[in-house]
Image (tube, rainbow, N blue to C red):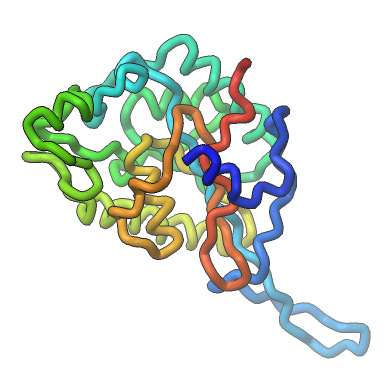
Length: 241
């Protein structure tokens, strides 16, 4: 999946982590602004909507061990804090119309260290893993062979469609905030952001299984002409060596 992720057009994302301006084409839902031509006649100028930046929280003890971490409020490791700080120079170059974060401490701390002051929304909390909270995939598959969170959900937790309903509300808010051309940023968790990414491009939430997303990774959602598109996915070039 890393190779696939790197094939997403990035407009020159280098090992320095600097991200250049990405051409978002002529997306749908764009705003119009009146302007006057040389002849004095009023014409309409199209305003491209902004993009949506996604940031997964930095590493935790549970994320490093592969444990499903939904409602458990674990803190960042020192390496996770360092990775979050490394995002700050990138995000400082942007002007965000809206910043949103999950209420869980690992996301809020990542946002803080990255220099953001987000609004907290429960719609960005991580997938509720129910009875599978704190268990690894290998452990779960001892009882449920071939299990995946995307296809099967979790007993006493959430199904993919329920997570999709939450992120669809986030997408609606983000698109509204970005109409004027400024970007939006969301700081959250691995599974919920994978669902958000596929819902942005009008795919089923279960398709999130095909999009790997590491801790402290950066993604950018935009447009290719009028179509929602993924401009950058799972970028970690800003991470400390």
